[in-house]
Image (cartoon, rainbow, N blue to C red; front, side, top):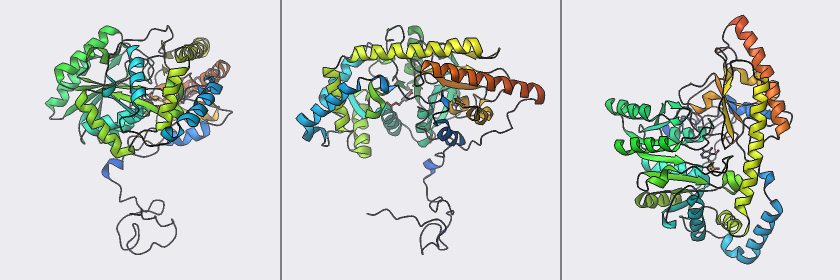
Length: 455
Ligand SMILES: Cc1ncc(COP(=O)(O)O)c(C=O)c1O
């Protein structure tokens, strides 16, 4: 069946077309506007997203995006691997594969997860188009509209986009320097149940969290798991940064201690290459079956070419050494960010000190609004992600996420210099005229779709 082509805005609509005189609704910009499903209502591009198209200009130092520094990969080795793959197994690599994903790669993924203390069977691994898709599939098979998902305060923007697209109610749980607070988590679950709501999932990024940069210590992980078990809720553990710890230690995953109550998400995006789009879910056996069916309904199968490229790379390249190189590179950039913030940030500014991953969470002195400040920062040639992007309920106005993964250390220092100047000017404005929260505030309409600039 052909998809009807929307009439060109401004042209007279034909009979029976959406937006025409014979049918209700529609607008000149989008004639289908009244036809969307309810679940698409929250899918609106934010004004912040529009600003990021400007922020991507080379003269802007972007401390906003979470893109890994793939330039540091051994690109010639990659070229050899892919050329060899096409020459020797092209007919397989360029063909469909099974919905669950390549068997050898699933075995290799089990070896990778062993580094986090996880013992798993390849049968329980589902390969996906990045872990973002694994997140989407898990929410799709578990959540009905109105189901409650408990998340960190703040939480990964891409996950918030998934929850909102399935019309979940997101509850931000108090998060301290060790991660999700188990007492607050337990109380939030009780409160939701007492209000007649349906708690369904607990979503957590316990290691080098996006956006906070913090890591839950072992005892905290045990407590969170205990709360999930006693509440009878599935725990969704999202772990894309686990191999990027600056001391080389890989924290033990929560999934390592419970095979039945945790869906674990992993990814090669941060450790090898995000453009390959290879991630996975490790799920309890019954859940795995549902995820495969949901994946087949969505994409038939993940890219075989990408899977075999990763598999070949893992089999032939010194990938652990390569990741060690990434860790060192990101550690230097983290140091550049922290040192320059120490030297230049105005008094009263605070930030988290990440032991791995890509991000630090910066909180500004009272009265400053990072969403309102962003256009002025971009005009001053530096970009960040305002804290509100990581909440569904407008919290985080005084905070921002800075990422150090992509710019070179000198650019990071220059970015912090510019940002410190912007913050100082903003502080003077607040002292003189009061809080800026309502001036220049970017409009926020409903939950955002995850933006590629914000991973
Ligand atoms: C916490 C978290 N989960 C999932 C993802 C998605 O990663 P992938 O590229 O594997 O889809 C990201 C990307 O930034 C992330 O930060």
